[in-house]
Amino acid sequence: MRPDIEHSIRQISTRVAYESPYMRLREDRIARLDGSEGVYTYVDKPDFALVIAVENGGFHLVEQYRYPVRSRSWEFVQGALPDLAAGHPESVARRELLEETGITAGVMRHLGRLNCATGMSSQGFNVFVALELSHGEAAPEVEEQDLRRRWFSRAEFEGMIRDGVVTDNSTLAAYALLLLQMPPT
Figure 1 (cartoon, one colour):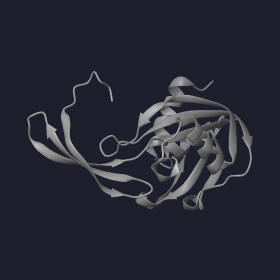
Figure 2 (cartoon, helix red, strand yellow):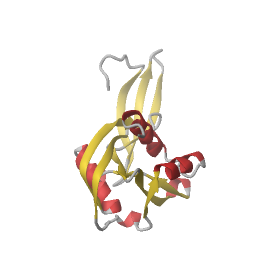
Figure 3 (cartoon, helix red, strand yellow):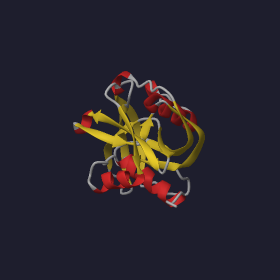
Figure 4 (cartoon, one colour):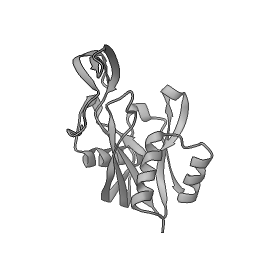
């Protein structure tokens, strides 16, 4: 949080309404600017890392079934530590890249930090670009047993965005950061 911004909502109290190894659902009693009180419920999770693995003018993506939206999704590699643990962003990024694709990066460059669902979650994510890649064996988690990995050219990837194949908001936001900081040559 930025200290120079006046907060229009003040927390009176907080409680964990639900908790699992993957998330906490918090319920906060709040006071608004006009003094009225209410309840704000939100998902509380540690930040995750997202990795844009760049090679030969294209990107390594993963596709998996995303249960909440009941469909498969092509995305940049992304994930968090288990059991709501927090970790150093670059370490989390390297771990996820290796786990999901078997790739290690000689260079991991931080592009920025973004928030993914500011109206319903405290979670944000750090975006990295991975370069100088070495390939090995992936070791996906049990929830990722249907994970598919594939390299796409930049033109194929952008076509997938235009055609509505890539719809993951974190992937699209990370790609915007990449384009602003490392435009195509």
